[in-house]
Length: 153
Image 1 (cartoon, one colour):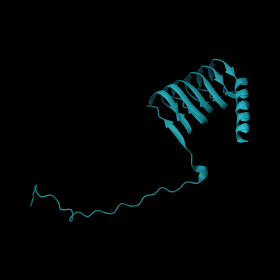
Image 2 (cartoon, helix red, strand yellow; image 1 turned 30 degrees about the horizontal axis):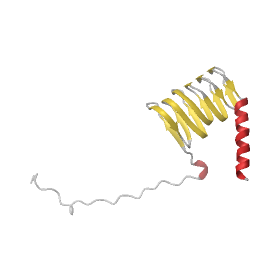
Image 3 (tube, one colour; image 1 turned 90 degrees about the horizontal axis):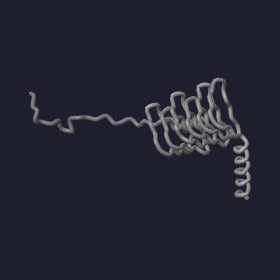
Image 4 (cartoon, one colour; image 1 turned 90 degrees about the vertical axis):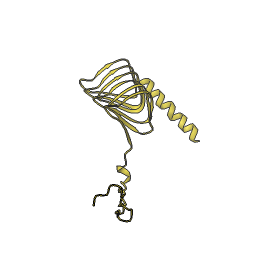
């Protein structure tokens, strides 16, 4: 009756076929590519991304997201220089920020460093300690446009 030495034969065990599970394809406008660094993540070094990114954890070093947007969450602690197209800041950044489009510092945002961007949005309650430069960023953007026109000819 209870035979521990006898293993069940494979013929006796029937396995149900695995269902073919496929996720439905999302429409083009609903496909969003966003990388996320969670609250428990501590990253040290150079962080480079070719997609939008949200950071809620800690980053030390440099962050490069040249053609996309970066969101710094309210619990984030960033000690890095940042280069991105757009940056939205809800948390703390210690380092210089350079954008080609806009920096948006929300009420809970704290920055200790220089900002170079053609557009800077500063909410009531946000803190910035550093130099703000919109002219250099506009000149850089015009130079990039001229290069693109010359290259495309």
